[in-house]
Image 1 (cartoon, rainbow, N blue to C red):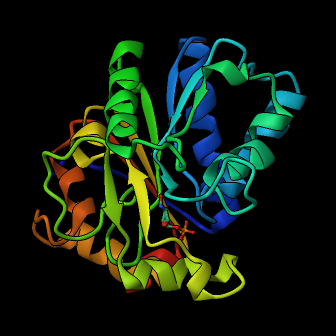
Image 2: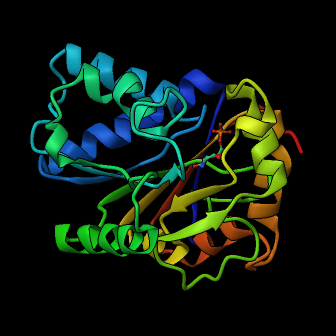
Length: 242
Ligand code: GLP
């Protein structure tokens, strides 16, 4: 197993550590291609990046970004869309060129064409240098649910009930949670040169335990990361409590 594991005390330390890795990446290559994630987990990382930008420690002006996923059916200005999330949590607060930020279009008329074009845009940019990942309680990465082929490229996915339930906390009711999403595929994620997985809290403890100790299997999507040559897991004490 080649995964590099950094154990930190809590969520704040995880976020700070992750921000250092991102800033180092941008310092080494100001035109880095970043792979970005949404969810609660990376919010602290984005806050730290904004702080570092405000302190003059980093500039995003030549950075390109590709997000992992987007809900099908939510317009970019819908307050639960991942487009909206990225603007609110990061893009509006730093000097990134919005023309260089990319998320799948969840309201594309032709979703098949959208996923193919998204995959192609990542390839044309030269691939992801540093991919930030969270993990679902069922081991999903991006929105690649258990059973997703490791060979998958950007695709339309049907969300697991458990994922819809977990994410219903952001919506008025579970009925408002979309049933489908566009997600970077597992092969798309694995193409990244470097991957940083963030894991925080008790609710992720079982998933982290299975990731570290379990087999590599499509039943547990995150397990594929063991096949990647450059993965860093930053996880806090609660995440290690299983
Ligand atoms: C979401 C996202 C994932 C994210 C995961 C965990 O549904 N599609 O990219 O990593 O589930 O979310 P959270 O960080 O809120 O626990």
